[in-house]
Figure 1 (cartoon, helix red, strand yellow):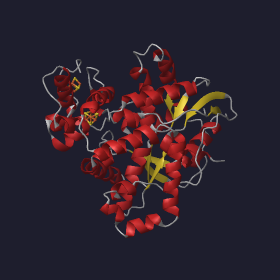
Figure 2: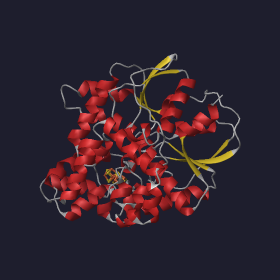
Figure 3: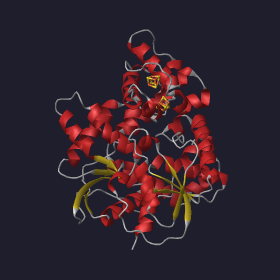
Figure 4: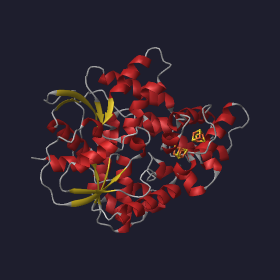
Amino acid sequence: MLACIRCGLCLTSCPTYVLSLEEAEGPRGRVGIARALAEGHLTITPDLLEHQSNCLVCDACSAVCPAGVHMDPLQVVLRSAIEPQRRRPWWQKAIRGVVFGWLFMDMRRFRLLVRLLWLYQRTGLQWLARHLGILKLLGLASMERLLPSLPTTFVIPDGGSSRGNTPAAFFAGCVMSTALADIDRATLRVLQRQGFSVANPKQQGCCGALHGHGGDLPRALQLAQQNIAAFEGTTGPIVVNSAGCGAMLKDYAHHLRADPTWAERAKAFSDRVKDLSQVLTTTLTMQRMPAQRVVYQDACHLIHAQRVSQPPRDLLKAIPALTLAEIQEPGLCCGSAGIYNVTNPTESRQLQQRKLDNALQADPEVIVTGNPGCLLQLRAGLAERGSSVQVKHLAEMLDEASTP
Ligand code: SF4
Ligand code: SF4
């Protein structure tokens, strides 16, 4: 907060400022409001809560800020400080208690939920709920549309390790290892083809990003400590295939910097975290594939939070059959941003449509991304438009191209 020199360089990078052109909906305004609150010049009002919670925590402002203001950790601390004083209706408190305190704290429970959703899809209940309009009635229609076709089996970290010459450890993720388990399996295959011996530590869980951005820092830190301990017996890079998780894992060092027991361990952990595109090299043997025109969708938590934009492009360019086209406004958020599409459906939709318009102008057959949120957000938008353009994770493209 104190670093902000109010230069305004961040304004045109901020999706909520671009949509609203309001100072309070931009990074400079948000920093100013947070500072005024901390210094006692402002109190917590509905207006203040709205402007702060409208922030996508996309870090587009942090990426261009000359003074080093870092919005993600600022929002994490601010939201957690505000939460105990925030008045919420009982049902919101109950949902938060179940989701943050129960569901995401134990992967066995999370897997059970995804298994129930799988049954919902396979037994015809989904068809019934959609056709009877029950989802619309409950206000769940737009959220339900994001649900991918769920796999029959999950990736369950078992403490084992595959054979290879270079050690690495794999962060499986909660959504990635269940609802998108096929992408986790593709990631593991690609890593093995690249010669990695991949450890999959048993005690790992959710990264805690949802908690951190949702105002529950204590539980985010609990998950951080669980993950740090889980990976301590492994060596080499900790490979992540979800941009959002990767950004959070890299921030453990910051969030635990003042904890005498965990500060050093958190730093050692965060220093090892690498996005999948940062550990793979273009020497991966690629096979012939049908010619395809692709665009790459930069996930905010990769391009802005982790400053990773060239490695995924280099990997895609190494696939002989692909033509990679660039799009307009590549750094503008697609509106997914964790659960933003649930909490702020209007702004989320505006950003989704803008991203799709930009991507489709490049006339692709496939949109490639490195984050589950973007993947589901763009797939839902394309399905609504009746488009045949596919959305794939980078790991899926590389797996297809390198399958012997
Ligand atoms: S670019 Fe950085 S220093 Fe300038 S107004 Fe934005 S947050 Fe403040
Ligand atoms: S994190 Fe994103 S939405 Fe939030 S202020 Fe920065 S640019 Fe705007």
